[in-house]
Amino acid sequence: MELRRAVSGDAALLHDVAAATFPLACPPDSSPADIQEFIDTHLTEARFDEYLADPARDLLLAVEGDRAVGYTMLIADEPTDQDVAASVTLRPTVELSKVYVRPDAHGSGIATQLIERSVGLARGRGAASVWLGVNDQNARANRFYEKSGFVAVGTKRFLLGTRWENDFVRVLEL
Image 1 (cartoon, rainbow, N blue to C red):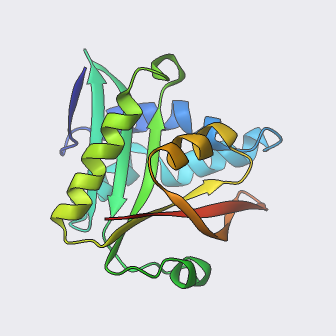
Image 2: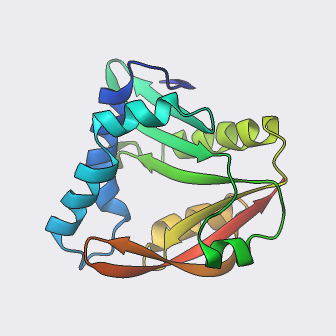
């Protein structure tokens, strides 16, 4: 397995792993149409091309052979969500916007490696904290983030299609 920074030309790999893994982060009663709309709006190859070109973003990619097995995306910017801004008090902060690993790689340590490298990139940007939002019903992810040192400090809402979901806001002090 190779863990590296994603570069221009990796948009197809990123889209492929994102489309396969985003549904895993959604509540079990989420509408398949809402999930697909999110993927078609935010996780397309074209969107990943935009993310890769954005200097405020860092994307890491875990690859085995020619297959992406996981990725993370960091956003070095002030939180725009009022609930997040009120909950995350250590500044400057970096959002760990996406952390996804294919199910067949769960338990392999890839997610831990991606988190550690992502936190290193945030430190390199001078961040005092890293924050993320995770669905309050995603018990597996919440256990993983807690084990990784991310503390729940608040809540926020996340629009998935036509329905508002509830997320925990978690912070890791650097």
